[in-house]
Image (tube, rainbow, N blue to C red):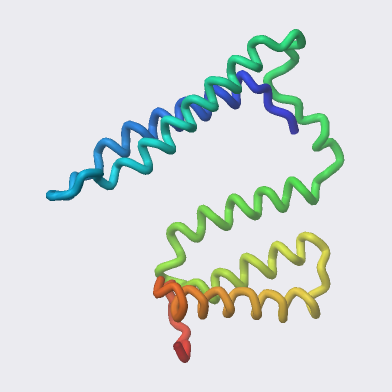
Length: 156
């Protein structure tokens, strides 16, 4: 799939402006020189500047083709299904993660995606278990970021 630079530049410019706007909503910390809005604002300014550059490059291009070209996806049903699975998994995780927990949701998501990619179950199951339980351990024990365990009693 190809998306024209004019459209990509416009989308990222709007997102960059949104980052700048939302960064200004962060409350200031008394007694500090720089507030918590400094880094998001700098990132938003960089994103806005670079996206305008992308948009200008797209406008200067001699060839102005279609805004979207999805001809490369013709006949690639598996890739489209995997992309839909990925987006749906992220959307489901936003709401289901606190209830179901990271290990169960992660296993269903990861093993499902590996099966869609035609990886055999005998490989997908141990790899999924290792990766998801490893991530749960690293986040909880090393990074001190508690991921929801859901109904599973984990030893850590």
